[in-house]
Figure 1 (cartoon, rainbow, N blue to C red):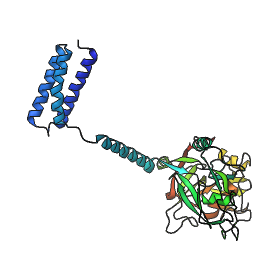
Figure 2: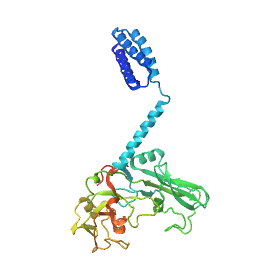
Figure 3: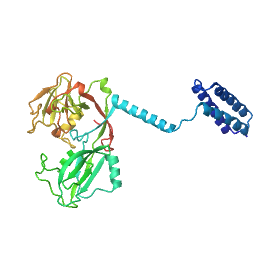
Length: 376
């Protein structure tokens, strides 16, 4: 008895045979093509007879000739997977080049709107592995718990390393020859007071660590990861109040000769023609108190915001005192950090050329904290 499922399988074989013939008809031998067409006809006749043995017998020569026309390729799974990887990489590169680019918030200049890398000491040992793994995946937290393995040892040098090719860490080299790798970058170790001797702001003579004494016992939150929209500014220019990303090449005091351009992320406070003034804690635009929510939030000095600040004893090129103003020239923008009291921004180094603008901060995709989503 020929079941409906058997008939369906045989019809599928016939369709596959027709595709192979169409695909290989220019390279296959004429006798093979003729044998395949005859085999298709025999399978059809066997189906009409409603006999499973007859269908099975008719399929054998058809499969044999199809295998000769289109022989299986060795290790084809490798080729298929390589092709898939190439396609995925090409799509990712295309998205990065023209639409979306991932960007890591490196500093605290936009806090508390966006978090940079934050390091804090802890009193006890790091939690167990499962807790660490969960916190890394969810909130981007990595721990360092390194104790000295030698008596009277001290830090000789600290250098930057890449941890598992994913995030920045440090290699701490000791005078004893021991070395320790930690998942906290050198700048954050500096914040924790972990410094080599003769470092600017550090000890003249290295601190001595005894065996079993902690060298680093802290955690670091790795900062918000943002998708940057590179497309929309091609159709409409940047808007006042945008979170925007720009390159540092050509900007005085930011460009470093012989090194690739860096990327900064700030709040766009002034567009061409605007006149700005800061009278702590407020920002004034064109003589009026900045009334957009994102500016009023900073000026409120609430929920972690510091308010807009003048020089406070630090050298500023622009807006250093409440009576100073600055007018934005054509094809330029003025960038301010939401963490105004601790932000190196246009007040210090001037204007962002229009050609340096990369795009606007669109979406915080990791970690999964309260910042996840569309930033404002």
